[in-house]
Image (cartoon, rainbow, N blue to C red):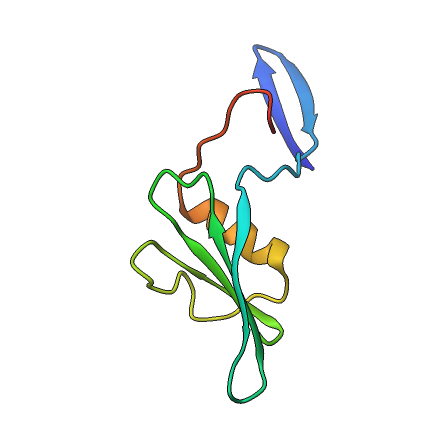
Length: 101
């Protein structure tokens, strides 16, 4: 929830805006495999990133984002797919048709 005050001369209006939790990125599972160590991995690829295909990798219980060149978005893994998805949406530009979100 965001709250701010807008002043119009001597009149102040309190405005409260509820944060809308919508996600604009679209993802598809590209690969699932088990490493030689036994760790399960999953890779998702973006479907609507304007900056190329970016990926999310789940290694064990942690999620990591990579840009279109394979560079890590953050060296620290996130605890859930939704957390890394938010990070990726804040980092890259996404194509969204009006009315889809």
